Image 1 (cartoon, rainbow, N blue to C red):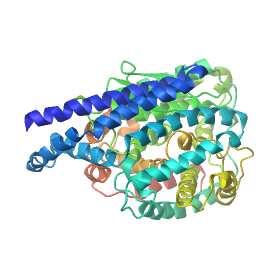
Image 2: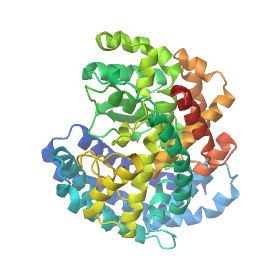
Image 3: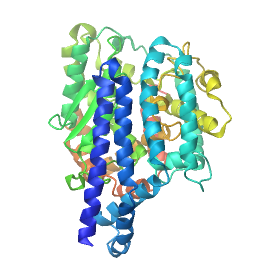
Image 4: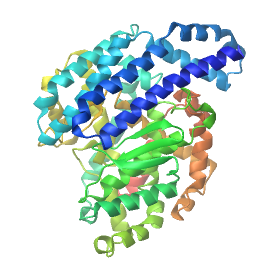
Length: 501
């Protein structure tokens, strides 16, 4: 059995290496690749994904997993080997249902679509990318069709990234959250608007990037095993547990864009960098789920990065970097500016209180497209109508509307957006657990000390990688099942105080 287990690990490492090589090509495509490389790059990425898929669906891997079944059952439930076999079996059983030819054509299609989206967004011309998005919808339906037995067509797409979640569960969870958020948004937006002009001045790009790097170094991002670059849409990618990279984007007339996207992506990266090195090269060397992964980026970006204690430490340093812009701006004015709540158009720029309304809107549009109730040609109008009804504003352009997010233009339609709201909910639940274990965390943050929080996250979440399911991890870490209560308690307390409701 030990020999079979080692053979399994060897095969899984080869698959991992192919995916890592494809990820490196994708990173380069988004950062430094010249425009002329787009066509060949799509083919190259598709080739690597196809090879990885062929290795994952090899009959010999299936036989290895069958041989190891009795061994797995003999192991303690908390065993690393048992978890590895379980996760590998789940990936194998999913992969064998998807033809390698589909993987190749879909990878090629999404690489091409991404490049068209970049041009279409810049030109504010949805018609350029619409036929590609229509094909993406067909491919998304085709992918879902490989997994019969699910209640909803979106379920296999959701379950792949957030194991155990379904459209029905999410609709119920999001419905309850929306019911709690709408009155809070209404109460806040009835108040006098916060003046945020202090963060809307000219802030040179070089200084913004330097300050962002200073912040994430102090949070715990290890530049010996990572780096930051620029891209049209911020992201995190990993090639190994010793090479985890992030990107940001900069607006020189908005201090918050680069700063908070940098902290957000560093949250993702610190999760990956904290995974136990014994899992290197295996499927366990990944985050538990998309929702849990997002909880870490949102925890650092919002609960920590937009808090009073955080800026008690960092604001004097920020004033020194931008003395002419912020030298005469007091800390409270700045704090209110970076936590301004308003009905806005852009998801990634949205405040904590309205953010989930943006996500729920997209989730509903995804379901409508997959179910055939909404055609891609009508998506821009449907988008505008939902923004009118849900947030009371309408995007003036499709670049600010249906083309603002990269997700549908670089992956499937379905399974992409629910993780953001799940992550917000879990960020509140995890942070509440961290404070119960370490009541002085916020006092330490005010001194610029993040080691206690970072270490608690590493010990309780990061090191385990994908060893546990999301449900198991939440129960282990918090002693409870998934709940919106800690998150809503956090939002209500913070914004009731900030807006004197």
